[in-house]
Length: 433
Ligand SMILES: Cc1ncc(COP(=O)(O)O)c(C=O)c1O
Image (cartoon, rainbow, N blue to C red; front, side, top):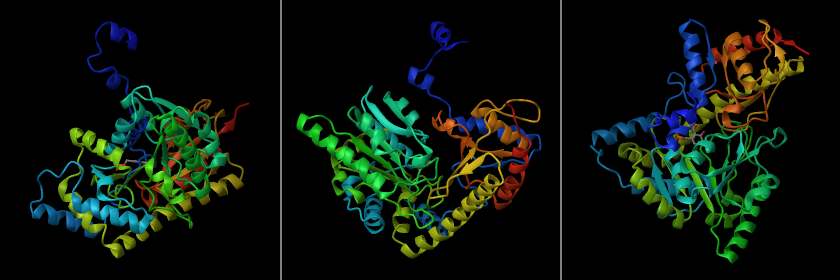
């Protein structure tokens, strides 16, 4: 039944917003993976931005601290803005690691970073307001939908490491109320350089000076740095206030332990920003009630102060992640040198690698022409047993063939398997024209 006839026949029993919310494409891919696994096929699953339990654990000291908090009975409601010891600890952590000076009333805690991203959208954006972000992007389309924003997507380019540039942003900034940036980036595994980011910040500052004269609402920058302690190859994480201190008035940082402490299920995230925004956002989050559990908050507060345990953990995590990313990148570069239609971007940060399977228009052995991103993905899945996520699933319709490979949910043996099966599958393809 079509959507309009469902509406006409009163089959729609929920809000139009909920009805029209697009399901995660990664979930659809997961369904196909499970089906193939049930048939006994081996699949190396590079689709999930998560950590396999047998491969990555949270720091032992954090586990002990969490258990201790439960034992001590700290299981009642936390304050809706977050436990004060954690807000204090986050303030110290950001001062030490990022040279950022935020007071506790500029910091909010929630159950992972997602509620804080949603809270930022709800607090800044009115229905119909323009939100600016580049594609491929992680979930900004969904957050725009939730708050009925007008999404202005910038088609990102390989030559810019799939990150937006000031020139691209300049065209739309006059109408935007929020610009969403993410570095290290999910899905691309790339990071802003100080110059790239400073150019964008200069635009924001210039625009806001004009708005201040007109008495108009400023444009804010949401800077998602969930992976910032996972930077490789000598890369330095850069952030708006670091490159332009005046950006403090307009930046909302999104951060948390989900990725760099391998703690996606622990649910501790924080946001920092100007008090005028955070105060309103605290009210929004209080009503949503997406609080981080109190024992996890208090345990994280203590763990963030254990500098040497944290550094030791990070060096182990990053070594393992970087080795995996580099291994795949080097293999892809060898296949490319041997003439296969592939490419990849040297890993910079996060959990991800950008890999190009430039196989659109090729003929599969069964005669099917790989005419779309989805057909290319399915070929790699069924023929090579390798599951990847095309950039299309992250809203990017321009860069066909580029895919995200995530290395947290696989084993080293899975990678070995994929590095053998992928070139074999690629060699079976015939150029069809
Ligand atoms: C860029 C980015 N921000 C935020 C999140 C969500 O983090 P959390 O699990 O803390 O909600 C993710 C998760 O994949 C992410 O990749």
